[in-house]
Structure formats: C-alpha cells, structure tokens
Image (cartoon, rainbow, N blue to C red):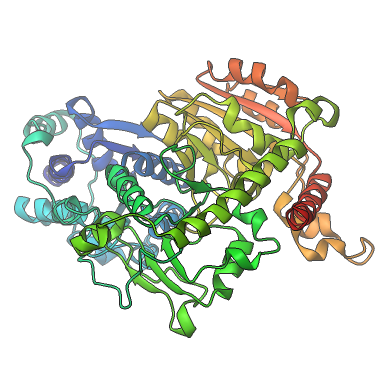
Length: 607
C-alpha cells in the first residue's frame, strides 16, 4: 500500500501545482490506470476546482475546448491509458489550429510494460504529438518515483506551455505513468488524502506563468517587426477581419486598435461573421462582401489590404484577394505560422505577416502616423463600398422579407437573416460547420445587436459540435447552437452534458436530411442514374432527433414554419437544455442560394 499511497500523493501534488498556476476547471473520464488522478480531483473539488465527468473522451475534450475558448484559460481533460488518449486527437487538432489553450492529461503504463504485450499498452506518447505545443512525460518508472520538486516543475511547465511565449495558445499533452498497485484503500487512502489535501495556493497570490507574462502587454507577447513597405494611411485601402482567434482577455484592446485605425484611414472593414465585430455600431463595417464580390466591380479594387487573422470562409472574397495587385499585410493575434494560403501579395511578393496582434502592431507604429484623419480619396473609396453595402442589405431585406415566411415554410437563408434579430442582445451564438457558418457570413442581418459568435474553423470539422456548445454555454451561463443534422448526430453523446450543465443551451437544428453543404458542389448536377449522390455525399440518416434528445431527458419541439420560431424560442430559452427542430429542403435551399447570388450580381450592375 505504500506505492499506492504515494501514487495518490503525487497526483494530488501535481494537480495542486496546476491549480496554483491557474487551473480552475477539469473534465474527468473513467479509468483504472488514472485512478490516482480521479481521486485527487475528487479531493480537490471542494477546494476551488470545478469538476465535470464524462464517459466519452472525445466529447470531454470538445466540452473543455468550448470552455477554454470562452474563458481564455486552459481546461484540463484527464483520461486513462490506451485508446482513450486517441479520442483526444480531434479536439487537440482544433485547439492547435484554433489557438485554444487546452491541457490533456493521460495516465500510462510504466516504461517496462511497453513493447512486451502488456494489456492496454500503446504508443500514446505519440498520439497527439503533431498537434500539441509541448509534450511532458512523467518518470518512466511512475509518477510516484519523482521528487515533489520535479512534479511541481512538470506541472508549471505544462501550464505555461498552453500559452507559450512566441506562439499562439494551444494544447499540451502531459503523459503520466503510474506503477501498480494503483489504488490505496482503508487507512492508506485516508492517510494520503490527509497528507496531500492541504490548501492550494490562492490564485490571487500566485506568480504569473511565463506564458501570461509574455501575453500580458500587447496581447500576443511577440515583438512587432515593422512592415516594409508599411501601409500608407493617407491612401485608400480595406481591412479584412477574419475569424477572431485571440483570447477574450485581449478583445477590448483589439477593437480599440481597429477603431483607431479606421478613424485615421477611413478604410472600410470587411467583417467576417466570426470576427466578433458585427453589431458594433462604432465601426463602419461591410457585411455583404460575399455577395458584392460575386461579380466584383473595378471601383472596389484596392491597392492596400490589411488582413486580420485567418481568412474568412468566403471563396469569392478569397478569389478577390488573390486577384488584387496590391500590398497586403496580415496581422495575427500571436499566431506566427503562415496564415496566407493564397500566396497573394504585391507583385507576387507574398503577404507580409506579423504575429504581434493588432494592438501590439498598432502601438509599434510611429506617433506621427496618427496625425490627421482620412484623405478625401480614402473617404470617397470607402463611400463606394458603403453605398454598395447599403443597397445590397436593403435588397436582401426585400428578398428574404419576413412577410413571405409563412408561405414558404422553413428555408435556411431566411433563418440566417432573421435569427440575429430574434435572439436577445448579447446572447452567445455557436455556429456549426459547414452550411450554418457560411449562411451566417453571407445572409445574416447586420442590423442585429452585438453578441459573441463562436465558430470552430481551425480545422473546420463537424465532430464535437454539441459538446463544444455545452462548454460555451457553461462558460457564459447561456448560449444558442445553430447546427445541421449530421453535425448534431456526429456528437450525440453531447446530450449527456445536460445532467451537469449549469448554463442554459438552446439547440436550433436545421434538419435537411443530410449534408447540405455538398448540394453546392458542381457534381450535384450529375445525372442521378450515373451517380448516387445521396449515398456517396449527402448520407441522410433515418433518425428522429427529437426522440433521441428525449431519450437523454432533453425536451424538444418541431418548428413547422419560421413564423412560429419567435414563440418557440421564448419557450426554449427558458429550458436548461432544449432542442428546436426546423425541417428544410436541402436541394431547394441550394438552388435558392445560387439564384440569389445571380440576382444580387444583376441588381448591382443595374443600379
């Protein structure tokens, strides 16, 4: 029992050290090899640690991902050994490309049991290697063999690596071997708990981690290198604001820096639906660029483009950027990896990139650059964009008017247009891949009030959608998820969170009988006798989503027409977790999108 007692003491020490660094939330999945970690989490729960439990490691990791995105702080996920660790990979990939801090802790067999046929022994050290910022390994003979100082140092290094200096935040993998006997009992268990459950270091008195120190000043911690040539604020240009991937702690500084730049230059801001900027009245934003650039007008061409973060999803905007014979500069929020898949830029020189963050880059500019205001030429150029924006938004209001909704039933374009107006201001919205996020970018109404909008486009997968939304709801207290049927089904274990969720979540399901995004592929025009499109691409599933939710204790209702959505939303928003199912016609909506784009281009040419 001495080794079993030391296993528990070592686990307590490691987790207490992590709490001292700032860990406040953890998700535990079941297992025997991880038994000491599970007991330690239970001991520390009443001492300031919020603990969630999950039977599905993949769902657990995505729930933690949503929590971490909304709070800006790493959440720990604790698993046992073997294939349990492999289930963490999808969330680790998204955390990597989405710049989300995440701490993945796995229990393991000692080194002597590797490569000899021992049960549940795999090369789990390598499972997440391609996606993590740092990999930490406990002593090969077992965590219990390490000194207290070594365990504490390992914990501190792991926490700092979730927000590493010079890199964007991301996932960390901490692999901890435990030797048998694993489980103390009786007096040994009580002694270990009494010995190891001393109060943790109060967060208010702890020293900042290396990552926090590096990120505190400018939002990225990366020195801003001057662009050469630099943007000329006295000449016309545009800002393209992609999905926001900074930490929430740095949002205010980002918006202030953007507002300052726009006031100085007069440049219009083409704001992606996931930029977080739509609804901010103080900024002059262009939301309809995806439709405006269906047939780009020469007068909208720009010789200067300041890009913020990753590219928006709009293929039309991407083509337009690639075609611009312009200076292009890209500022990311601490992401030093290349974010320019277009290979665009002035005269083929590529897009210059800075990872200093917009606030850091802005602060590095010479004070003289801020003197004066926009030039007349820049104001005239911006007016062209805003005139087209106003015309197109008025035209969209006519085409997707609420007055005709009762007759046409449910269609996805009208839903995207109306939803922002129906939801209370400030209520967070999570958009699933693939069609919901694209429709929001193209058709959402810019008159809707501001709200946090989350999309997980780092790797653009549909796995983990419901669990992510549950994590966001837990962090904010309430959220709404807009999802398709395949994305929801792909994460049906997410319904299990309803028993632990303290925040409210309303799930709005667009059930169009399969993968609606594939309806927009050119292969859809292939004769059906030559290609079984439904089986090969759309893959509709004969499933009653309301019944599946009800089996998990989640109430739901079907909305037959969009005219009935407001009253059903009033009901759903009062439930802890609820499902609203809207059945739409996948093929008809795809044709509506194509038709609307052609009509928009024609309307602009005639005006």
